[in-house]
Amino acid sequence: MNRNFLAGASAAELKTFLTQQGQPAFRAKQILDWICQKQVLDPEEMKNRPAPLRAALKEAFYAPSCRVAERAVSARDEVVKLRLELFDKESVELVVIPAGERLTLCLSTQVGCPVGCRFCASGVNGLVRNLKAGEIIEEFLTGCAEAGRKCDNIVFMGIGEGLMNFEELSRALDILTSPEYFNMSPRRITVSTSGFVPGILKLAALEKEFTLAISLHAPDDETRAGIIPDKVRYPIAEILRAADICRDRTGRLYTLEYTLLAGINDSVAQAEALGHLARAHRAKINLIPYNETDSVFKRPSREAIEAFERAAAATGATVTRRVERGAKSAAACGQLRVNAMKKESAQ
Image (cartoon, rainbow, N blue to C red; front, side, top):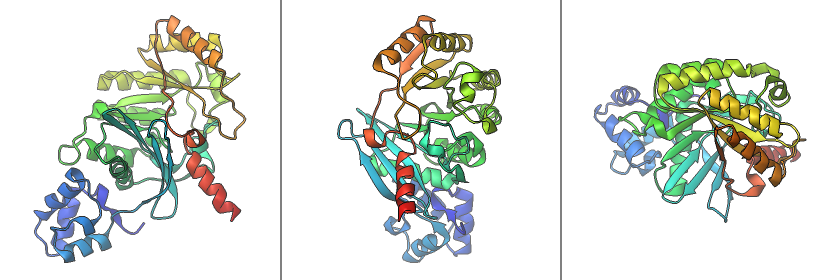
C-alpha cells in the first residue's frame, strides 16, 4: 500500500499534491467536484483537467483501486451483489439494493472479519486487514455506478466489524456526510456491530445521528456464547448499556438484529425474552431468517419464524422481519468471497 486512495483524499491533501505538481490549489475543488458531484474517480475521465495532471494523479493515487470481479444478480428483485477485487488481490462484497425510487448500498469495512460468528461466512479465515477510508468510499462510488444513480441509504452490514476499524470508518463517515464532499444525512446511514463496546462508545462520542444496529442473535449470554466466539464477545448487559449511551447522544433508537437459527435461538420463550429486552431499552427488533451456507446451522421453519415474531411482538416491542432480497445462491454475507477463495485454493 504505497499510495493513498484518491476517493479518500481531503481538500488539504489535494492542495499539497497540486502545489508539488506546480498546479494551482483551486484545482483541488475541481477534482473533488469530479469525485463527489459527478462521481467520477478515474482521472482519465476528468477530461477538462490538463493531461499532465491526470497522469500525475494516476501515478500518485489509487484511482480506482478496485474492480468488479463477480456479480450475482437477482432477477426477482434486481438486487446485485458484487465481489470487488482490491489492489492487493483480496476481495470484499458490496450489495446494491433498489427498492422503488430508493437505493440502498450495503458496504464492507474489513477484508474478512475478526469476530467469527459461527453461522457467518464473512469470518472464514478470520481478519485479513482493515479497509482504508478511501477504499470504503470507492465501494460507495462503485455501488452508485452499478445502479446508475446516487444512493439514498447506506448500511455498513457487509464483511467486517466496522467498529473495530473505527479510525477508517469514522473518516469514511465524515467524507460521506460532510457538505464539502457527499453531503449525505447521517440519518441515512446505519452502522452495524456485533456488540463491540469500545466502538459503540466511540460512535456515541461523535454525537451524529447515525443509526446503530446490534447483531444480538440471542437474548441471554449463554445462548449467545454458542453463536459468537469468546474473543470479542461482550456481555449483553454491557452492550446494551453502551447502546443506550449511543441512543441518548444521537437521539436515534437502535435496532437489535436477530438471526433466527433453528433449535438454537428460535423458541417462543427466547422471543419473549428478546421482546422484554427491547422494551426495556427502547430498541427495535429486526428478525433475519438464516440464509444457510455449509455451516451446521439451519434455518427455522416458516411456522417457527412466524411464532417467534408473534411472541416478540406480543410483549409490545416493535418487531420487523427483514425482507429477503437477492440471489438465493449468494444471499449469505461473505458467500461470494468464500466461494472465490475455495476456487483459488483448488487450482
